[in-house]
Length: 186
Image (cartoon, rainbow, N blue to C red; front, side, top):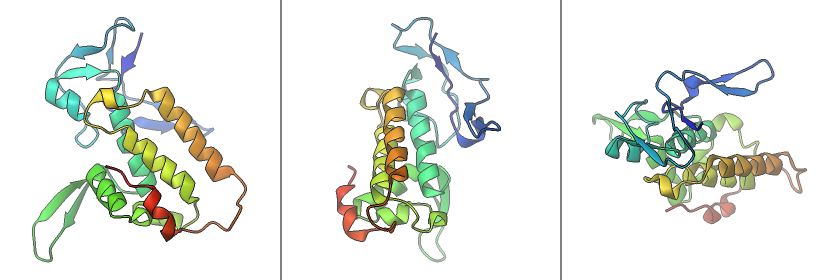
C-alpha cells in the first residue's frame, strides 16, 4: 500500500548508527488504498517551504507530493541553506523571505553555479557530480506532480552523482567557472 509522508524535511530524516537514512514522524502521512488510485483529497498539511504547491493549491495529495519535498531537501544539502532564508536585499530595507528554489534557479540561470554549492565544501567536489545533483533536485520541484520523476528515477540519478564523485580524478578537484554554462535551468 503506497504511503505519502506529507512532511519530508531534514528534521524528519534520521540516521542510524551506520548512517543509513530513515524517515520518521508519520503522524500526518496518508496511505493510498491501491496502486491504481492517483490522488486523495485531504486538508493541506506539511511544513512551509517543503509543501508541494500543487497539493497546497488543489488539496489533492498525489504520489509525487513527497518528491517535491525531497527535491527541496536535496537543494538544502547541496547549498547548505535552509528552505526559507530571510535576507535584507537593500541596506536599511525590510527583510525578505527567499525560498531556496527561487534562489537556486536565479543563481544557476545567471551562471553562478559555484555560489550555489555549500561553501563548507571548499571546492572539494566534482562539477559533473554537482551539476547532476542540481539537475536531479530541480527535476523534483516543478509545480505539478505530472512533471516530476518517480522517486526510483531520483534514486538512480543520485547513485550516478555518487559514482561521479567517487570516480578517480582525471584532473585535480577544483571549481570550474567555464563549466557553468552547461547547467542552465528554466
